[in-house]
Picture 1 (tube, rainbow, N blue to C red):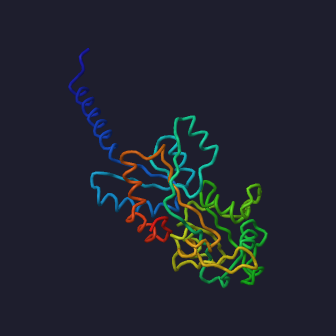
Picture 2 (tube, rainbow, N blue to C red):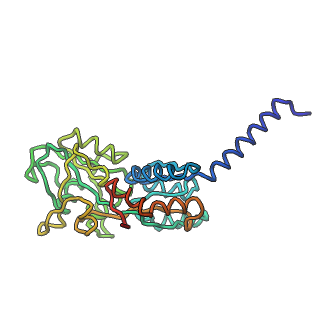
Length: 286
């Protein structure tokens, strides 16, 4: 049976579309992962594409775990992560022929925030641990109003969630078992935490410094009761004075090549690192 003209034309159009997609995909980069890094990555992408109009960079969030999973499954070129990749993730990647390659692209301080109406101005790491594990449940226990504390956290797939749990709740103890209180509200994004804090007088949460705005009040943090309380600022993260800070990472499949290398080089260039500072993160290169 001979194919009809309609079928032949349909095949031609399908092949042409496939060819065009393949051709365009060679000039595109997919970035997925850390919500903390979304605004930074979008700023990088916009500036890069202005200078390279033939290239396309797509950025989506979803959390560090989502980005790493996407890299392992081959559905992104760059995974943004605000935590180090786990050994079990590396093992899964290797089974699939993926070799995660880590690059530090900036630094970040995690800001602890409350509603501007909250009179509390400073807390220690120990007090924060007691709040977020539920041991302290009312602001009056800390000298504040007689008001129930509403705990806001990022969801478990978030690198921000993992970092805060390991370095605040567990105080850096790798064998620690402390977990967020069962009453904690797991929020889908840093912006969701910011929005809830702005309208909820009893709420407390945390997010990357890039989300700080006048609608929330940042808490000064001390390592312990004998230490000075430190404000989450770029200068204090650079000097290491602020106790809740971390690296911002990207992962690629092996060392970056071709278009991905071109974009990574831009991230690490003087201009790229200036964008890091403009988005309220801390550059690794001056």
